Length: 195
Image (tube, rainbow, N blue to C red):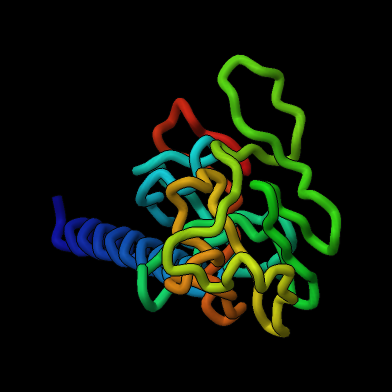
């Protein structure tokens, strides 16, 4: 084999290596841009969203959204760290909790207490009735309240153990503290589904 053939072979191999490195770098920057501006992943910590989400499940959330009633969102809470909850009322809506039921603008939410084996027909399901919690954000006698501008009111689906807007640790959630809207559960794989 001649020196010219060896040089061509080395040059081609160097070009191939450069192309691989370039492709890897492009995909790496795309990945960083997607995680920074479009979507990211989170791990559910605790049982406050049972039966919808379980402890240690992995979810994807979109950073491009406007919070609406019934959305499941990830919140950056200064007291608790990242938490996952359901939006039950948005800015300007009134929220009332009485006799274990949640009312938004005077209408009871379309949700039902979860029971294994029953046909589930509501928009979402809770594991217990909604009561006022220890260290309440709003005292029972002060309901109904109106959600301030730029905020949402959130509850967990497992109301008996959820630290949510009923608590002084969370209260009204500022939209600027919302990291994103959960749209996909991907792990464990047997529980994969669009939310």
